[in-house]
Every structure is written in C-alpha cells, then in structure tokens.
Amino acid sequence: MKKVFMIAAMATAVAMAPANAETVKIGYMTTLSGGAGIIGKQMQNAVELALEHKGGKLGGMDAEVIFVDDQRKPDVAKQLANRLVKSDRVDVVAGVIWSNLLMAIHKPVTRADTLLISSNAGPSPIAGEECHENFFSMSWQNDQTPEAMGKYMQDAGIKSVYLMAPNYQAGKDMLSGFKRYYTGEIAGEVYTKLGQSDFQAELSALRAVAPETTMVFQPGGMGINFVKQWKQAGMDGVSKLYQVFTVDGVSLPALKETALGILGTQSWSPDLDNDINKKFVADYKAKFGGYPSFYAAQAYDTIMAVDHAITTSGSKDTDKMRAALAKGNIPTTRGVLKMNSNHFPIQNFYLRDTVLDADGVVTSKVLSTVFTDHADSYAASCKF
Image (cartoon, rainbow, N blue to C red; front, side, top):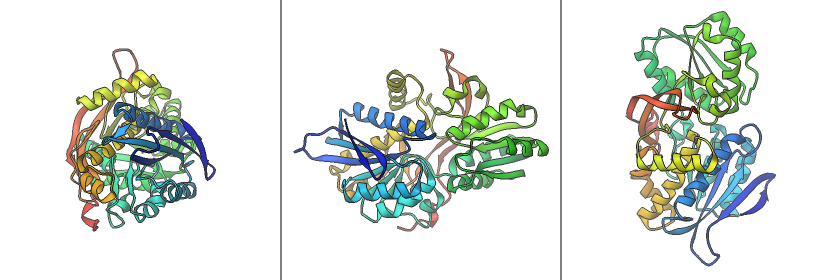
C-alpha cells in the first residue's frame, strides 16, 4: 500500500495491478479524519473487503482504488474531485457521505465525462432537475428512508410528532420525505447545527412541548451524542423516540444497550437473507471485529456495481458502463438492485428494531417491510 498527500487531505492508493496491465481506477472519497472518520473507516474497510472478494479485479480488469479524505469540507472535496479526474485520471469517482459535499463535486465530475457513484449521499436536486446521466446512486435518495418512517408512523395511528435534523441538504430532505407520508400534527420542527455535539438546549425545548413522539435524523457521532443525552435526560418519559440514520452500525458500538428498542427504517439490514449479504456480514465481522454499518454495505455495493458494469459491458468506457448500470439488475447486499430513470435505486425499505444477537451483541433486525420496490419522488423531474 502506498500513501500520497493531495491538497492537504490524505489519500491512500490500494493498487492491485502491474504497471503494464489494463487497470480500472476508482477515486473513493469519504471522511477519514475528525469525528466522522468512524464512518469513513467503515466504508474504506468495506471497499477493501469487496476488492478482496473479487481477487483484486473488477470485471476481469486489475483494480486500483485511491482513497481521499474530504475532511467533511466542500472546498476540499471539490479540489480532490478535480485532482482525481484531471491528474489521476480515474475511471470512476465514488463514495461521499455528505449531501453538501456531493453537491459540490457533482458538476465537476459528471461534466468531465467521468462516472460519479454515490455510496451514501442522495440530495434531492441531483435526483430531480439537476440530475446528470453520469451520476448513479448505490444508496437511496435522501427522502426515501424517512418516507418509510413517515408511512409506518402514520399507519400506526400516531397523532403527533416532533421533528429534528441537522441544518443542511440531507436534513431538509429527510424531514420533507417524512412529511410526504405522515399527515398527523407536526408538534415542532427543529434544525440543529451540522456536527453538533451538545443537544441540551434542544432537549429542554422539546421537554416543554412534551410531544407524543419524536423523530430524529442525527447521523454518525451526532447520533451517539443525541441518544446518550436523550437517555441521560430521562426523555423516554416525555416522548417516544423514533429515528432514521441515528441508531446504526456506526453508533451501536458506542450506544450498546442504550439503543435497545429504538425503531428505525432503512433499506439494508445485517440480517437480510441473501447470499451476498450473508458473506459480506460474516467476512466483515471476522476481519474487522464487529457488525458492518449500512455505510459499509453501500460502499461494498458500490464496488459490486463497478464490477457488474465492466463485466456486463466488457469495457471500462464511460458510455458502456453507464448503459450497463442504467439497466439495473446489479447484485448487491440488498439483493438484485433495480435502477430508476434518474439513476437512483428502486428498492425495499424495512422497519428495524435494535436487539441483542445470540452472542449478546447489540445489532438490528428487520421487523417488517414498509415499502416494496419504492421509487423516489423526484425522478419525473429528471431529464437527461
């Protein structure tokens, strides 16, 4: 493994090819430093596991992945994207946790006739009017997961809910998606600072309202801090907590039993019963000592998508890979993935509970399927 430094951000190149062989190059952008580095590390682990499973080859071609650390800064992400496309001449730029960062690099990458594959972020503008044929999502459109939670809470007869999310594109999309399917009373709608660690003021305000339920989106370290402070403040006696992307494989090792019984919705779960997912989860646990998160699963699926595109088309040419991905039928940890006209997946969304497994380790399990083959709400506005 060789290490180089690019634009004040760490980049690690994992090379799997001799110099004279045809090589597919992927620039994989994620957050590897700061508090969000825990997410990026899981994604890097999963990418490396996928390459290991594929014997270092994607579509029969030797593979090279260059990992870059965006530091959760849009300006750094944009600089790195330009470097990957212009200097490293990668065939695919992939990864990206945060919607504001994906918005920053979307045009520079797609207009350079390079494929951009998101492993996580799914902002609504890119799904709709600002869509581009060179962009694909291997995760979900931001609104979809909270749409499932909104539908579940609506069907469960919940009369009112207090909403909370960080104040950035994904946070706004999440609450918009929730409200698309939940028609009860919104007792409050609060936007917190992205990266916030102290929620005491927000919890005090919530206590004064005393809503029937609370639904939050606080990903990564924000979720760890939020749930811990919720429990310490005795908020379970004030309101019942529901969540999206707050209690997951990243936060559970820190939250442990604190998170038991908190319901959420998601498109992936470690207990999904298909061969790819079983192997991924088992090998990830064996190699890295714990359950993978959905971030890891989606990163793994991104590499599976590149492999599928090259295998199906017989080429790493952008036009041919794009045509192959647009047809869908991509083998992933979620099963065979369908692709919508705007290049976002059409997939199931599940209600999940937080439980103890047979070894006493906290994980999640599927309780029911909220949506089957669920498409996002913006595809009709996408005109390639």
